[in-house]
Image (cartoon, rainbow, N blue to C red):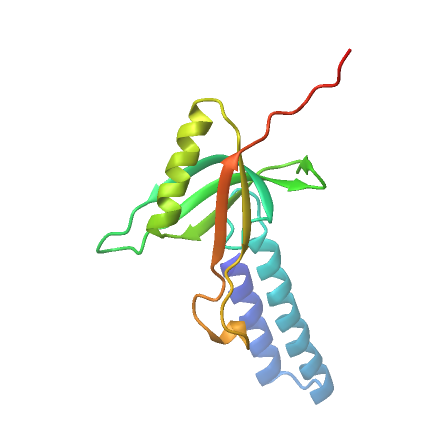
Length: 160
């Protein structure tokens, strides 16, 4: 995909420099290539199978977790596979997420995975970490979440 976009960019550059097209058409070409770039980025970002850097869903069932501890070469990461709960029902497909490494979340996920291995399903919730008001996109780390994991309640079956 990167090579295809680089080729499109090269063709656009050639068209801008050596064509006799009117200025409005060259401007339209630049706008359309820019829009295509952002559309392609969004499509690739949501591609199934790759861990998403997006925030976790508000409510989810924990399916699996892989912990990459920090070392001298990498800051570490927490990879979780969850099934989002939408209107009280599981989403049709699970999704993988990549979270920044923290010791607290590492311990929480370890405990949750121990219970999952014992057959106790784990219900998770996430909400954005509260911080100072203002432009959150200007503050590094403003996309942090507060994640909580607990045992999934046992469903009550109706009487016969």
